[in-house]
Image (cartoon, rainbow, N blue to C red; front, top):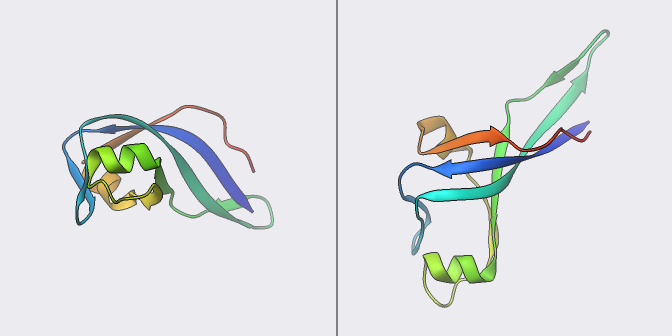
Length: 93
């Protein structure tokens, strides 16, 4: 089973996603993803994984003119407090 939910990220301080690409402070939309494992009476979910997708324009604005848009796994930045998360929609399974 998969659970995917839209979330809102608030970047509290600039975050370097990769060399040459720094995400500035601000609000961004993203995705929370979890795997579910059925048990006898319930489903056990893995810890959430947070994903942030940047368009080509955003990647070039935040980095160099040669960067292309991509999806970045930002879970470690959420854990360290560099990025805050709030829900924006109900999960889909």
